[in-house]
Length: 79
Image (cartoon, rainbow, N blue to C red; front, side, top):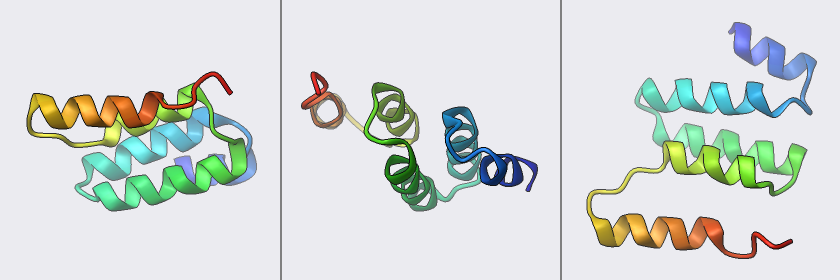
């Protein structure tokens, strides 16, 4: 609740969004963490830090999956 309140008070501060997504993911709600990061992207834009936060909450079970996740997150970083 404290992180959500801090994020609501300072919605342009990425650290609150990322920490909250990590907590949600660790609580077992991976889909919720991704939904929160989708909301963060709407608020903050598509940044390298946001993509790194997505990587922290993305699950994969083998090297091929990991490579696919990394390829998707690294696409169009030059923007």
